[in-house]
Amino acid sequence: MTKIEELAGLDISFVLGPYQDAIDRGLKELRNNKIMARIWAHDHSVWKPEPDEITNRLGWLHGADVMSDNIQQLKAFADTVRSDGYTQALLLGMGGSSLAPEVFSKTFGTRVGYLDLAVLDSTDPDAVLMHAEQLDPHRTLLIVSTKSGGTVETLSFFKFFYNWMVDALGKERAGEHFIAITDPGSSLADLAERYRFRTIFFNDPNIGGRYSALSYFGLVPAVLIGMDIKTLLDRALIMSSNFESCNGPIGGNNDGARLGVVLGEMAKAGRDKVTIVTSPALEGFGDWVEQLIAESTGKEGKGILPVVGEEQGAPDNYGDDRLFVYLRLDGDSVYNGSIGELEKHGHPVVIISLRDRYDLGKQFFLWEMAIAVAGHLMNINPFDQPNVESAKVLARRMVTEYREKGSLPDEPPSLKDGDIIVFGGPESDTAAKALIDFIESSKGDGSYVAIQAYVKPDSETFKALQKFRIKLRNRFRMATTLGYGPRFLHSTGQLHKGDAGAGIFIQVTSENIHYVSIPDEAGKSVSSMSFGVLKKAQALGDRDALRNAGRQVIRFHMVRDVVGGLNRLGRSI
Image 1 (cartoon, helix red, strand yellow):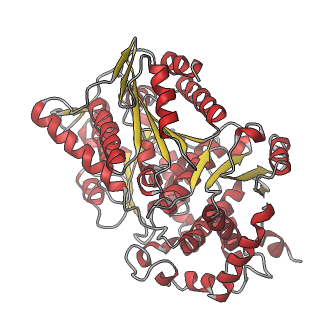
Image 2 (image 1 turned 180 degrees about the horizontal axis):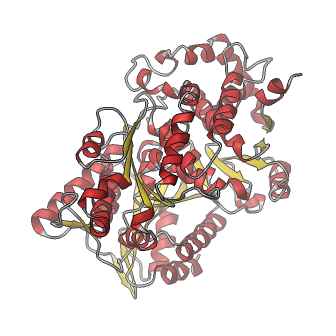
Image 3 (image 1 turned 45 degrees about the vertical axis):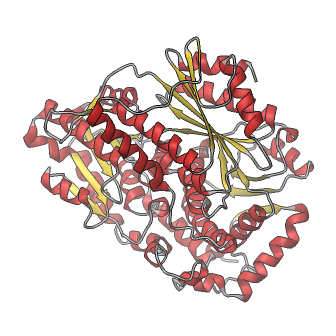
């Protein structure tokens, strides 16, 4: 076996127990209907009779090959930025524009002499202000990243930081500190020209946001932190060769087809909570794959729930709706024991081993193909997001009302318990009892708890939220997810409204420490709205969108102390 052949396949194992027969049938269906060949031929009928939002969303199949021709261009850009004295970069983006860069930053850090990269994907005013206070405008490059060019959060970030840069450097020099990554013809392209950005990277418009890790959206930030993007792309190309139609899923090692069939068939069998466990060095990857799975499969009353970042528990902490996928970095054994216990107790487990961090190039392509295959088996279009707009529409209406009346529309509280105000849920005497009664009255077969935290994303709050979710999991034996708002709206928000309706939603909101205004126009001081108002409008808009879709939602508003309030609720569980 040659070296290239050794690299082509993954070190991947499947322990599926009684589900193996269904997997074998699924693999035969792929072979008999030539599904892999049809995917490569851009045949939309693999998923739906009509080509809408399919044939114009398959650019990822060839993206790594195309981007390999642009490696020198990207390296030259990074060298120019470094020679001009830039040492920091802040990416302004949401969802598919921000998640891959965040994976790269968390996994690889910054190579000596390159730019420290931070990602802003929170409209929490204290989070926005924190980045402004930590950065030196003279040495900072701002990356404005949005496929559509019209993402409200991204444009709000741009207007704030453009004014911040003007205040420090003046209008003549401000634009040279910005770059744009977007699709051709987007409104951001016009904005970048108007404000004289340093450069614009035009991405392939046939690549959807969540499939864009190996395009300009992921690779521009990657080269700025000093990653070896050639090795990353080479690994992706090796993986793509593993998926060629000539390599059948039966009698071959077409790992994308195999993993896709496992995901799709297990979901159909009720094992639809895909719990991602990673080596500590790879934990950032979980957030990327969470969006890919949730936004691609959560629609038409179906869905695969990705469970990411949930602390490992004992086998009896889990229900019979789980599939575990363990991504293990070579030489790491921290979760070997707990994964082995899950296997012994009959939970289905997939183990994928990575030789080193650059094998993430393989993983991006593996999961993209696997989700495309799972979508075929589930009879859904994995490339659209039909329910994402509902929360955005309602949030925009609330912002309009705020501008007209000076306040956001909200429901009256159902309970005030000290520093915790409760909105929605059953009538109760205390916030803690309201929580328990809400879950008990809402849960059913296949239920999961989604914690939606519209609060400042800092380390202490994260620890409290994680502790809170694990208590919920252990008491109710339900899968739990945790997302910061509005970030999760661009990730799991589609699934929350589009799946079978098994979600139980707990919103956590808080008072803002600082008032941070959003300029109505970049370069001007007039402002009719703050980041705090935008964040609350998004929380209330999503609440209404969930309820309109028949979901159960309760909100706990922490007046003074988010961590203290979460700990207080947690003690009751």
